[in-house]
Length: 141
Image 1 (cartoon, rainbow, N blue to C red):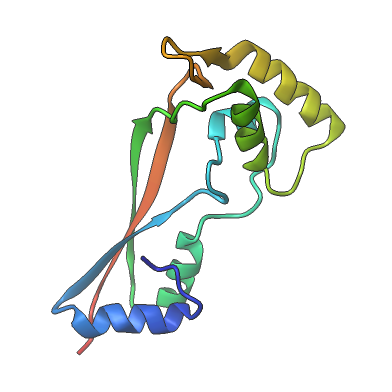
Image 2 (tube, rainbow, N blue to C red; image 1 turned 60 degrees about the vertical axis):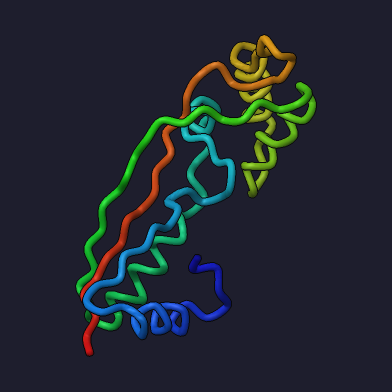
């Protein structure tokens, strides 16, 4: 995990144990639970980038010429125990808040797409695409 207060120190630690190459995965979404399809449907502008941008910046500053590839895969979001829990969680993924117009679009979207599952849970009726930035670079020894 690169969850660290000091990104440069974390990268150097990885390099200290690598023989030839360091490979890491970093999220490319701006917030946990960020739903691209939902954000697009309510005209929510992506609030920045995922942490991979900072990793790439640090490596580029050190002239390490990192390679960047995105690994995309469909995933089904977990089911929530209640409609209220689902709405709260989905709303919380928009960390900078929503305009009144976006709130209205969100309500409509959830009304149309948030469904009760056969086992009594609640989830959106579509798959989301999970995307992880795969970053690798050669270690200089």
